[in-house]
Image (cartoon, rainbow, N blue to C red; front, side):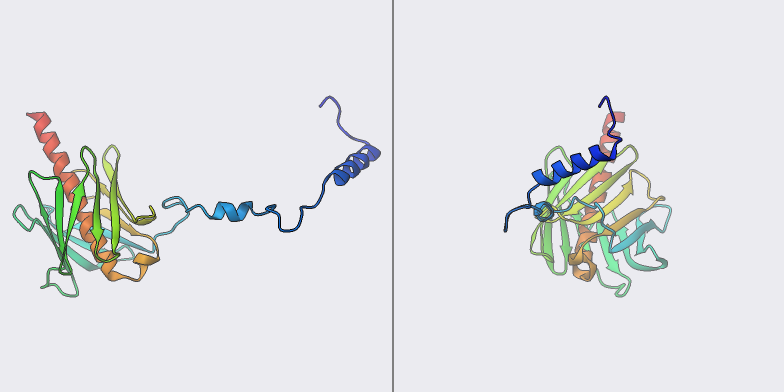
Length: 226
């Protein structure tokens, strides 16, 4: 604007004209319902959400085939132990409350893009999609199809698990080829918060996915170096 309204009479005239032209909304109109419409859209994954539980996975030997999983706020008291092997079962998960009992076992397949997880008397088959580290499986604990997705970075990768409504359940942050740095496991949502069976299943399938990605990455590096 070339001029600025500085006189009081001009301000009053402008205000009066604006009030005359502004009409109240009719009864039962949609005016003011925009916030309700916006609330119908689901929240973005992890946006504004704090994890209900955060666990830390850490190697306990220099071979990096034995691990402890503990609450990040109490890392001196492990909740789970993990052992990886070259022969089947390739991974064994135990709860420290029952150290002599196998909570879950994992088996990899050399010629097929799938992973079998045995937990709570159930066999869960993680089916990998071709040319990507994305996989689905039928959850016995939640009775629905869950999807694992990997987001790779330069030296690290994230694993995200979402339900059928794309709501986040768990996020695993890990490093390629390095077990000394450990991994962080973050859980989200009420379906996970107070349900140990769901957490056990997500830990078992998530670590199976992480190990599968590391094995595939190591195989790719070995193939390109020959």
